[in-house]
Image (cartoon, rainbow, N blue to C red):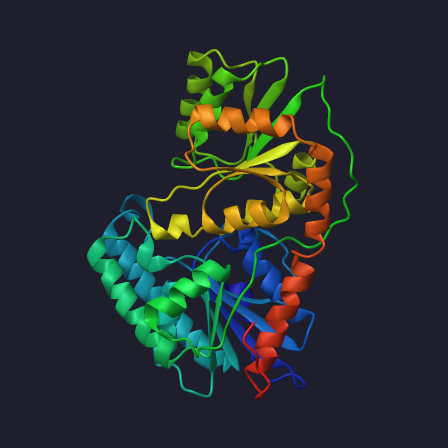
Length: 398
């Protein structure tokens, strides 16, 4: 733990309720966790964050209202990828987190994803437990099957017996969890990871009379990026421009750039350097449409709930999407784009051409109006209502 965070007092202040957020991951880039903390800080809650050690937090001047406890990794260097070492680091995180939870003595412990939920097994019933499931951990393909069965068993026991409130990303994942574990009476809500509301001016985006297409987000394998690039073979470079925008490993970025070069697509497809979140949203609003594709190989991917859907909507960008449930629902219900059932280069190109012939300004207007509804300003009210419901009999399932 970094010493500068040890000085935070854990004495009760006024009548504020203490909340501990447990997180394993990069808090600096976790928009969902940051928005939830921001919402609680503006209300009647005193918030503590216990997370793994992160250089970005140590080097930055974060809001002093957040009491941050950073747990340093016990091992470094060449052993960092060893499974046994990783497991040892995880156990140390659990032990130290449990110690800090007892030291803080909170009213609520808010567990983000399954790895932190284990701590709730060692807490008394006076502490309210919230399970905030960002991912379906028992359905992650990179976890061995045997371990997934263990996760499923523990998740069911803890969810049914210890958790006071279940939160997840959308109605489809919520239904899946309630159906899987037969815990239909569990207090539960879903919170879309939508950005704060922004007022966007409706205007046509024309650069040399080209139709501008953007994919933004992490540039990683299995995101259909190769298919997006190769869709350029079926598009007129004088009429269309595709931009890939987001962080990536150098190796994978080089692979994508080589694919562009080998297929002679430099005039239609380009890759831009990643941008900070706030700059990113301002950048994408200059485009015409956004591409959002997810696979179906695992249930976790199939039941995706991508941030970029709500970010595209907020910035007035119509979308071309794969037929995953949440994506298909928004496009079909609110007329904001086109669904591609079989994601391949030709079908992507045909969908782009189809969109370019539609009334794009009407689609943009639909997105802008939708952004007034699906924004964090509204989602945060659901979070506060659910928190209040933990301490009275007025809780209502949302």
